Image (cartoon, rainbow, N blue to C red):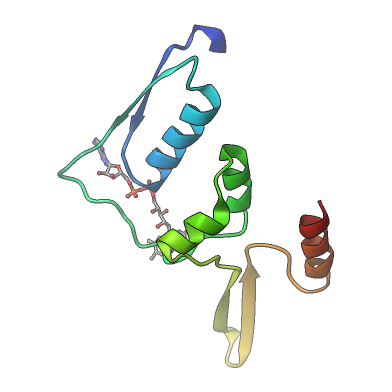
Length: 115
Ligand SMILES: Cc1cc2nc3c(=O)[nH]c(=O)nc-3n(C[C@H](O)[C@H](O)[C@H](O)COP(=O)(O)OP(=O)(O)OC[C@H]3O[C@@H](n4cnc5c(N)ncnc54)[C@H](O)[C@@H]3O)c2cc1C
């Protein structure tokens, strides 16, 4: 399929994924595409995410969104990981990280700060 022939994009669903896709397409390809998002008043969103993960930085950067403003306006948090207590056995906990953890985290932080 030749991408230059695509003129119209319809996004089904106005939840997190739908609106993020619409924002990305609109920002990056909006001059060349007609974008339509279809929502349903009858079907609710999942909408239970209580935090987001560090890789959302990439999305904010891509769309040139002021992350500090978004975080403040939405009272949001970054979820760095999930702690599973008594995971394999009693008193055996496990942290599932969504980013760098332990020794690698300082290098990653410095790399982010220093560019
Ligand atoms: C318990 C739980 C905890 C979670 N915690 C987190 C978290 O901490 N952090 C995180 O980032 N994520 C978390 N998630 C995941 C996150 O909440 C969901 O993945 C995300 O909200 C799903 O977005 P979505 O756009 O795919 O679906 P939805 O937000 O549900 O949107 C789907 C949309 O499609 C529409 N739709 C459906 N059928 C049709 C149709 N036939 N025609 C038109 N529209 C239609 C609906 O009306 C809705 O607007 C969690 C999920 C669960 C279940």
